Length: 213
Image (cartoon, rainbow, N blue to C red; front, side, top):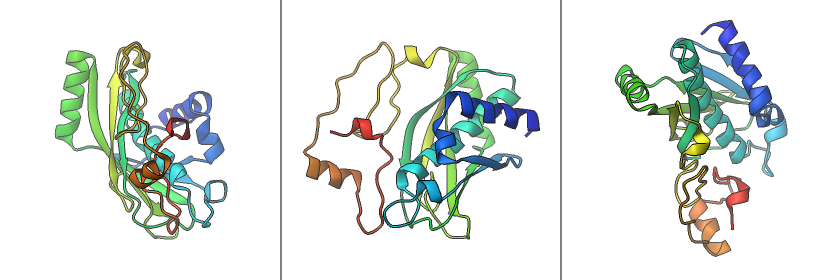
């Protein structure tokens, strides 16, 4: 990955994704077929002194988004990149700075993505991200040591003109002109159970607080 592309990515973060500055996320390296980001523990700790699951979700989502953004720019394509769905499993806590490694999809998946983008003006691919404790332990991730997957899409149309589900499950954002019937509001106790709150692990779901009942 060229230094110019990474510098441009950092500028995009600064201007269009200001949360990255608040979280302290930085690019560590961009090896062939991957991207490694780092997030400090101090501004992202929870009440247990480990990494806050919401911050880990933001880190993994950004890693997947950024990997596809770089792939598009390297190909000379300026399509919009959007997160269409996101799944995470928190298997163990992160006790120090978090390292997120986004893995490029295999050649067949990327061929399918490019074909859809060129033929229909939109494409979709799943990006796997592994998050590890900087001291060597497992943490959270999209198919990592908290595991899951992120469906990342690209479109040549403005995303604001599409109906996009930004988060999976019952917690759903819809943008643009299309509208969907909102998901029914669950009672607070039931919502906490479905979303997987855990006092012991200090985990919260990867869901924007504004969407909670």
